[in-house]
Image (cartoon, rainbow, N blue to C red; front, side, top):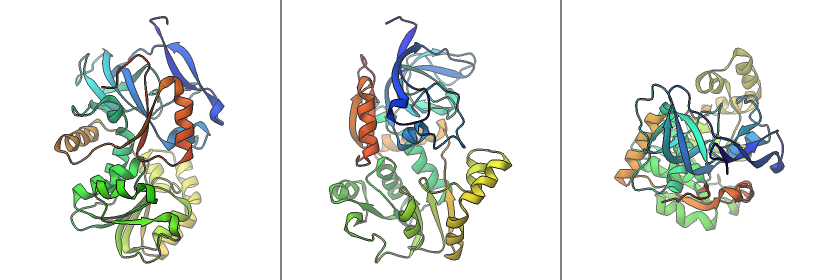
Length: 344
């Protein structure tokens, strides 16, 4: 391959799986404050195929074609002007800029504010699985639900990418955690610290549950509506899979009044139901943060947090990785590794 070009998984149009393809494209050049990273591994997330399908066009307007991928781990290989926190050779992990993406490639640029030195105890695949899910869980539990000692917390889909990290973070904060999982995922979520595990395949998971101070919804739809019924008045429900509401536009996305009004209309039904139950409802769109990644790295170093990997695929098999992701049965994260690079 030309030393100025690289392999990348490119989104050329909105649509199904065939809307993305492996291509050879120019290696990016870092701009002011940016690092160019030799990508060793990149994490997959449901937001990747939702973006591909066009479901995020209202809140994430990007210019096509674009290299996909929201999170990565790798080695800093070049610095743009005025970079202050990193040097060439640093092993880093990052949640990339939402407007630029770029993780599904052999090289990527990321602003230094969105990167951190990756935990020393992790390999690249493990580190690449942390940024998006870890930041989502941290910001939801710490900043929105204010989870602390004695909080009675419900988390749906505890065996998934966000759920496995949310359980561990909630236990670190001192919460009493109830979660849902299939029989195949029960052992995993118990090992991560879940106090009560409900088999969601056996019927209505909400039957017999109640009195929760807070809930983190990772499923949306009917699961979210049932979750509203198990949180006590005065409690809060944060969702990453439900319907965006006005605060999402204002607080998370800094969007216009027009988008805020659309979210107000879209979320009217779920907000009405939450209000009737005396519950605060919030849809969270997490934000990249190098400072929060440093906090996650500290928790990994202390042994309070560990990534859970479902499976890894080489970059040339990323289409297969997406098939596995969209099947929805992964326990933990699915990660792609870059051809010719080690993941240790």
